[in-house]
Length: 151
Image (cartoon, rainbow, N blue to C red; front, side, top):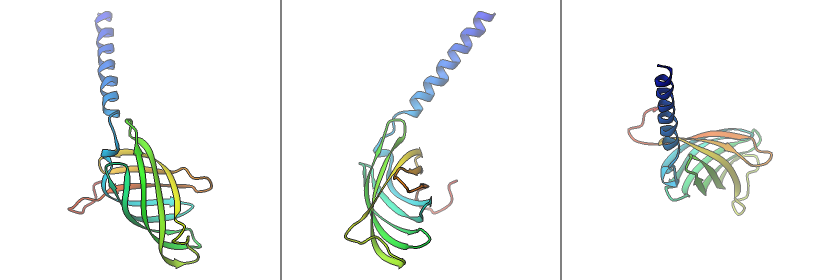
């Protein structure tokens, strides 16, 4: 009886962990495609949208940011990577298009931001800044009509 129960537990564990391994691997840049609403908080707060092409490029986007002293609107371009386990990187070039108040980065010198990402689902990506002296975290949520809250 103990031998049969022990064997059943081993088979169940192998099935569970085997399926978790397969489910947890197989992500790629193709999983990040379309337009995402962005929200982030930390040293700088902001919201906006960005469009990913499914090939590792941020091809368009806009963002409004505020650090308490400066308020800026800008356009976004950049790149991203996605590892098989869903982790990856995000690099954004923010080019100021409008100064709301304070002093924003010069449009001729785009601001570069780097982050770590985790693909949570086909509609949600968690983001954490990796730049020195810039504490940031946020979420990218895929926009899909009809517009409703998916969470």
